[in-house]
Length: 252
Image 1 (cartoon, rainbow, N blue to C red):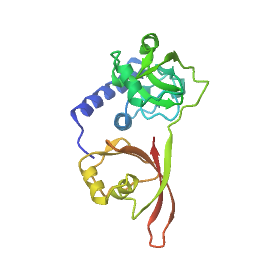
Image 2 (image 1 turned 90 degrees about the vertical axis):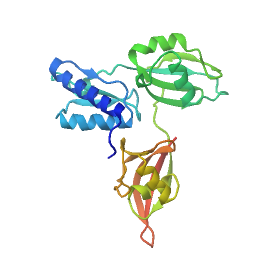
Image 3 (image 1 turned 30 degrees about the horizontal axis):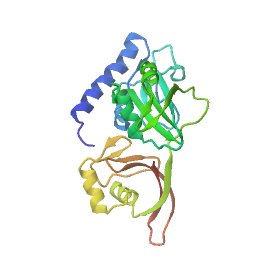
Image 4 (image 1 turned 90 degrees about the horizontal axis):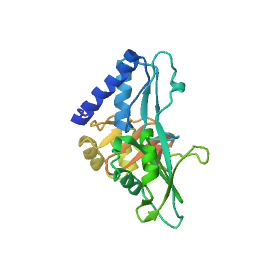
């Protein structure tokens, strides 16, 4: 695994303090929204601290960015009330908005990235998970995103189920080595895939990996910085030459 960056070292220290304080103060504690790397680091620390009473949640189903909630002794994980609100932005179906448009509008209000979770774009509507204390401010101040006029309101979660969309393809790989799977998924040559891995640009389940020969398993989430994210599916068979047919789900 690649050595942690300065930011990741600081995050690790904050997460460790949060986890310990939940037990010491006997009060539920919550992190800001964590990306894949943050979640992986949190899982490592939870294991090291032998903490079993916790949960991750991002505001709705299928989220990548999630908060960590740590329970005191008197609560169970399903009793945690995460301080998350989901905003719904309604706009004309003739308009098209991007993830960047929505995030830019939120950050223009002075809202920091770690207080915003996943953003989902649908026809005529966009959804964003945010820290609860920011919700009213966003509702009152966001009337336009990009070129589109929008109506901003709190979403109660009863109208739609927000899930991550993906495009599923089947690829052929010589083995389940990390460089072989990345090369087939992008697609690029094995040489280019190896260069990306060795440069620390490939994350496996949230953590950077630099070993091209590392084994990939069904269910692993792979992120190639600047190129995309995908989920490794099941093996669907082998060719006459022994190559593995592997399902890859590209997140869109």
